[in-house]
Length: 183
Image (cartoon, rainbow, N blue to C red; front, side):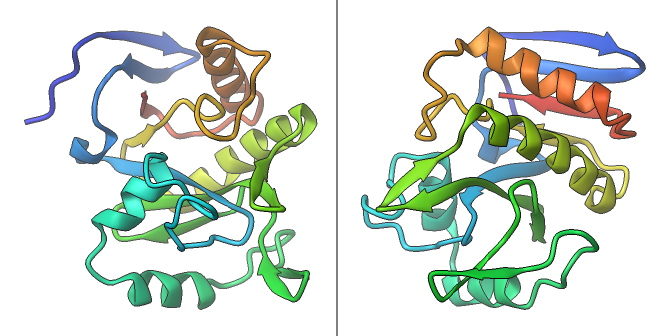
């Protein structure tokens, strides 16, 4: 059974939000995993770091080819068509691809083997992410990591400020996802 070391539950405009420490992989909810805009799956400490949430997710999988197939076969979503960038398929920030009980999120740009995300792109990504969650979640609770607190390096914001941005972007999009956890 999942147990967090610390948690707090809030109700914000009818949305139940539980903020807790814990292992996202132990959650039985949808689990949101941030990727770069190409949905790369190479865990080599260059493209994807082994110690990142993205790297840990990929290394837990039994069949990387199945994941790559699901990503490559993802249908276009209105207003979020796949593009090509440097000869590769590129997805809009905020785009979600469902895989098993995971929501894979295009969270950062990727250039010169580095994840990049401006503050403006962060805000746009979060608003788009909530719209995508509404499209995918099928009324199941969702567990979300503290986006921007890891390898993407939103460095001038502390954890509390990142949490505020995530919540405010949810409320501003009038998202109907009523149960979520943020790690």
